[in-house]
Length: 345
Ligand SMILES: NC(=O)c1ccc[n+]([C@@H]2O[C@H](COP(=O)([O-])OP(=O)(O)OC[C@H]3O[C@@H](n4cnc5c(N)ncnc54)[C@H](OP(=O)(O)O)[C@@H]3O)[C@@H](O)[C@H]2O)c1
Image (cartoon, rainbow, N blue to C red; front, side, top):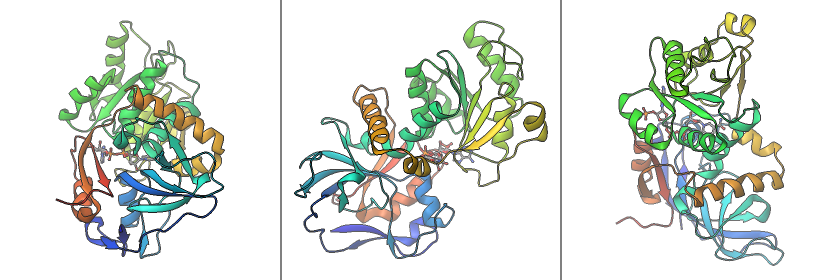
């Protein structure tokens, strides 16, 4: 069977290779054997391959933060999972045609769920849901602001915020990303650049039909109290400038490759808080029951169309280098997915 193998830390398209390994065999008593169907290539995968992630892999090794698969066999003590069930793996190393996993490491998904959408639930949808619930007690009609809003996480934030009744200000870095995000349900979509706080205040005021408050005054709920930052660098200062006093910036990505910037004025006089979020860590602190409940809800959102992330391209494992080069491109219209059991044609 085929797996993607990381052979060294370096440029992703050069250091990951598709190799043949023996098939997985039968699962142990409390294990399930899973044929992997779809796995997104996330920025975190690229970071890990290129040496910029929290953990540095010892090569050669398997990789791939998430994916969905179909159960081909179950051990005799497995009670909650059956052959043919679709499951996501809570652990890493998913870019493989098949794998054997402990029952406690998989989450069963409902029949009929779209496989490609299901493949993107664990990391991005889980991240969006946790960031909207864990840091600020938001009320319906509250505003949330985010950058890199046309990312997979950004799309999930827009959809989940809308379901909860929150409104979103979405910052992107190019004009061509604006209309698709409006179509997705983004209430305000702006291109990054000078005068962002004034443009945000004016757009919120237009959208709510009232004068709102000045940035820095929490007068009406029309000034965001939660900002989600995937860019780091000066992106943090810009988002913090758009928040009400006491607001929270949640940094969850480092797309600019620069350290987070925040001013003493924002921290001291305006009581802005800068915190980090990592889904990898939060998965370790949640119980299995909490994780199951979250993904049950997100799976329902996928089935009813609330969650839907664009997919730009799919690749078999045999074209892993092309897939990784594609995933690194700027200006994509959607995610790049690996289909580990699809043969190249
Ligand atoms: N902390 C966590 O637990 C966690 C979990 C999930 C994701 N993340 C992070 O969330 C971010 C988005 O992930 P994803 O899978 O949703 O991404 P994605 O769907 O693959 O899309 C990447 C997005 O990043 C944008 N981008 C890249 N560099 C940028 C920059 N310097 N300034 C502004 N935008 C930039 C791209 O914009 P263009 O379309 O203009 O190229 C694109 O919208 C990544 O940083 C990822 O590591 C973190």
